[in-house]
Amino acid sequence: MEFKMKEVGFSTNLEFGELQVAGDEQYGFRPYQLLVSSIAVCSGGVLRTILKKRRMDVEDITIQTDVTRNEKEANRIEKIHIHYVIKGKDLAETKIEQSIELARKNCPMVQSVKDSIEVTETFEVSE
Image 1 (cartoon, one colour):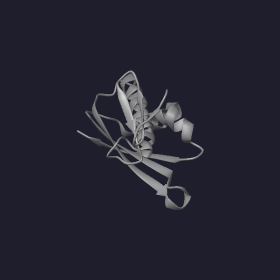
Image 2 (cartoon, rainbow, N blue to C red; image 1 turned 90 degrees about the horizontal axis):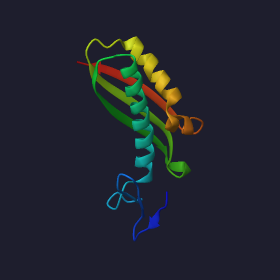
Image 3 (cartoon, rainbow, N blue to C red; image 1 turned 30 degrees about the vertical axis):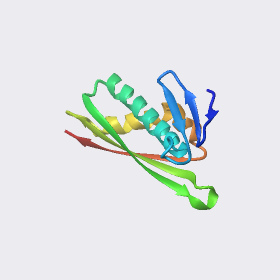
């Protein structure tokens, strides 16, 4: 990836399109937003694949995140809590718990930050 400096922030062209990144969200995505998005969506994508392989009837997954940052240390991200709202029929909560643990172990983004950012997960099932 190559990033080009703009008046405010940087941009890069990727297969899907142009990505604008800036410290001010009026000019692009903020770096912490991209980091949190990468971790949450990677986890959710891996979880979705695992649930599908387990033949669980999942209609929808909504991912909510809560981020804890440390202002004293450059506003670094210390913790990301991921909460899944999983919609479907006859979903076994035990299988979902096991699937979330497996997703954590197989998500490259979570594994990349596991020694520096605490990532926790919870879920709820809705019909």
